[in-house]
Image: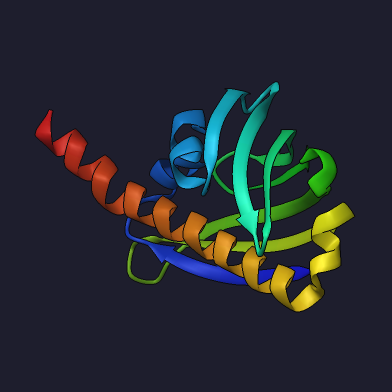
Amino acid sequence: MELHATRTIAADRATVWAALNDAQTLKECIPGCEELTGTPEEGFSAVVKQKVGPVKATFKGDVVLSDVVPGTSYTISGEGKGGVAGFAKGAAKVVLSDAADGGTDLHYDVDAKVGGKIAQLGSRLIDSFARRMADQFFERFQDHVEGDGAKSAAAD
């Protein structure tokens, strides 16, 4: 399954890049994320609980960053195992560029695969779920960078 989208974030590239590399920000933005530890240099370990259709699972896995061009792009890839529910694995190429309005365009291309019990749910349900997860992540990320993060910095 492939997903492609671009979001314009009302923040400079350095701010967006820093947030994309911050474990706490990522944890807050990943739907169902209960734990995210590690660093961009060493990789991250995550625990994510999700319900896909009738299947509930806790996925444990690792995420690594590669092809890193600081301030511009990276590829984030990982694999999570959900026990009898199956597995999910994928990669996303994330590219930042200056937006015409002074913000930052965040473009992503995602390629993901699932297997096991979850894969038996059918591609329409899985594709819909994956789109919703990506939308929720990037919506939360955009809100964090534009709003919550900026508001808490202004309050200090």
